[in-house]
Length: 404
Image (cartoon, rainbow, N blue to C red; front, side, top):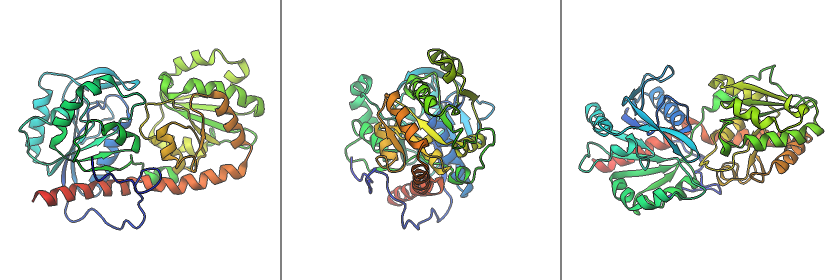
């Protein structure tokens, strides 16, 4: 690979003195998702929010995804009609089925006469990959790579040569983090220009969110939050739960607010805790984007106890932008995003005891809370979609200029 943008310690390019905008002229952009919008996921949210930002800037955008239309599928998303569930990177992904999905993707690209097509995770055997058909070159292709692995999968090792050959059609690659760049470097063509551009957030949505009185923490009754799939081990709910038992001994009025899916699995984990600790847990279910912003802004501390399989950590950036102190495991992605612990308190991954100590320390130190709030709020501005989308569009324009 060449041209990897890594201008600061974390590997994320700085937005300082970036006065360029994405003019002149609107673009016609096609985006292909490897994952169905029928289920929630970080890649789908990334595509949705990025597309909305481009449309707000006057660009024409269409998205193609596997699966069927769901109630909350945006109007600009079209679907290929079917998907299959596959266990992938510690989670379950809904990918495109076989049969005619590849020809469906290529027909969609030709019919829409795009200036550029942006593929997400084309290394995954789904719609994004199927657009890279030999001899099919209707316009330039750009790809974003999201995944980072703690252990490099055997299937990728076997497929490296094939992937490198099929990805030669790309004009540029984007990785959402240094960890994702390290993973994709194994199979990307050696001379392909690669940029590290992080996931985006709607900064103002979180920064301007009002706290919710029902969730608002106080020094005597702090609220400590978790958001994610509680039934998925790598999300670390069990570590969070065991830490809570120790925290309640120091803060007996503490409350532990849990948003997301997997409540039944979570309650099985809580069964091993003492009754007092169990009684401090409150399950909010899946919450809307607006409620998520209120959630972060109401917390005394947000906890990200993931044990691995993360390439970025969008929840950290969101919580920081809402002015919420963050405590996160010291996995590679979170260390990178937090500037090695400058913008978030890190704890030893997998250690509920260390997490409990870090929660108690933070809740006992108002100066530390304020310092993390201020540093996180300032740093997270870098991830605003208005900045991220501009950087991506500049890559589009550079490619189109070279292809003229």
